[in-house]
Length: 572
Image (cartoon, rainbow, N blue to C red):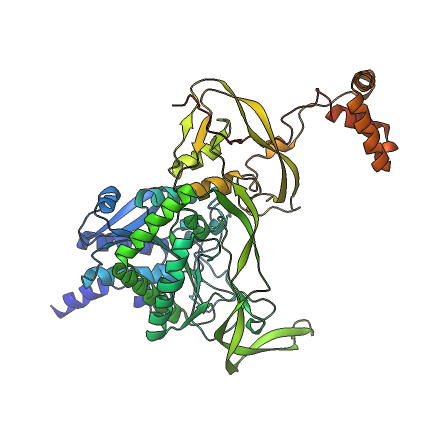
């Protein structure tokens, strides 16, 4: 009988807990097997699969519902909140995986599930990387082995939420739309400077967050999380991204643009956090700090369930009516706050590798001092939303992503010529090397032009009266830092398709200049300003061609139209 009781107790321990040195993170097969055993024992838990990863494994969502209700629509009808917790987007940062396994068990075993909050845990997001087990994070203090940052396509999945090159991102969109969480948490491990804290925290950057949500998080939710974590022995500080070499120079609030999980979820008006445990602290300490943070977040969400529902609803309504949207931001270095920071003295000594000065932190010299906290950003680009966007059906990936994000779309019933605003791309910068499989455009400049353009039956119309207007505008305005244009979705419009034969066009160009005095003046004026043009016959011929009726009108024309008036369209 004693042996049976011991076996039953051990059956519910996680692989992390069963390891003698507590320096072990569960492998993928162990994670799934563990949750499957729990689900058979507790009816308040259900495992739901969403799509597959690029390696062909289903993305497992662990749902805990005290009322044993697992229908998202019914849960919303009962006015319950949903908290979504993501683990293992970087499998080499696995604390959330092991902490969630323990927390799910304890909540079920102790019957501590919240009454008004349904809990959703993504067991492992980057399954592919989790299967690729090794020791690639050389700077990290344990565990003994862990997964790899890249997935099966060698993508960093925490840069993939706008471009959605992975199947994981598509599955994540399904989860967001189905469960409509009000609060989201993404568990990570930091790198960088050394300091005394086990846990650091990233919250949605306040200057790009909806003001209603920002007020609640800044004044209520975040301070309460900091207070409770300190009380449980894991005092926190904001994520440490140094202004210069060490935290003494000040730390910078992390700007999580929409390529990141929390940047994407904030476009859905979801309150979002990232935990970043310190890589140099013992693994078991990091796991328990993550456990405590999740427990505190759950408890506060239960306490504030009504308020969280109200601010989410208010934010959705505000975004529906919002007319101007920020598209890019830069750090305001002139305005900063201060905070008390507990670090270690930094210095330089000769490197045993190069003999040159190297940075080091002296743990024998801890300090507590006031440092600058640069947590203010200013918007550098804006767009006024149009009445609607028109998207040619040819751009299938764009419209498919809108469909997956539950964006309301209509389709033209007939071929229609419409007067609207189009953009011409006048300038942009592109790096010489790819970033996450793309040559990411930046510093995009546009020339707007009002013109009549023909759209065809089946082309898409997106009216901008939706709670997800941020996602719509920030992806469709090409100047946006993570717009679809920036991620190369529309690169085919950047190339010319027609040209001219010099000796044939010479006579046509001469005739054009005779018949069009304005074109002749335009050429002469440009020659007077530009000596290179004046000295090049080919360049002058090209100038005439580009300013003639023969030049293709679609070259550099961004294909998404902006409807500026309430023109009645025949749509279905």
